[in-house]
Length: 168
Image (cartoon, rainbow, N blue to C red; front, side, top):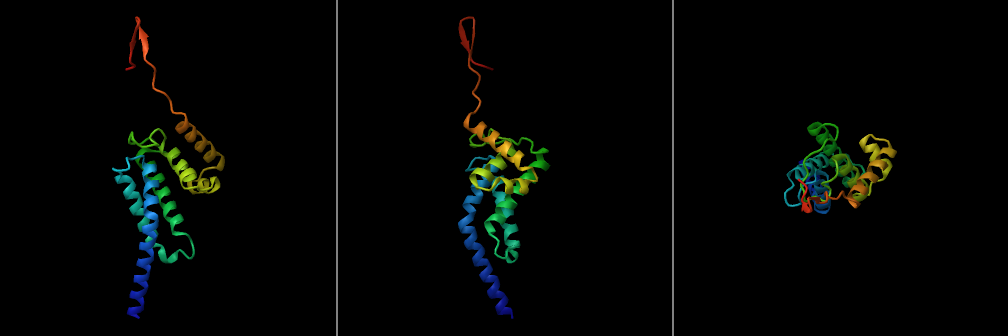
């Protein structure tokens, strides 16, 4: 009996290690995009990843054919949303790293954009995951995409008495 349990635990651990080897990099990249941290300095993203993987491992035996990647991604997204809500209030603005490609977006815009475009999650699934209407998810995704494709330009220098002055 003990040998059988040890064998099962060993098999479970190997399966999970294989999953992590294949999925951790992509999940970490998604978490880094969500937190808008620099890729080489991303402690919040690493914490999100660790929590998502721990949650996935805890429910490994109960997956019953469910994709563990989907489970981990879902936990990552909901943990980010809840953490941002509690830390900054209603998807408030965290201080993103200026080198992050998504630094100009709000946390909610980043979350929806990462789920929709980077992860390829359907609009309806994203809406259900976040508890938002699908139309709202569509609007936020469009706005975030427009913000990234057409960033606001810095103010042009203005002329004062014939000389150009940089904006302050």
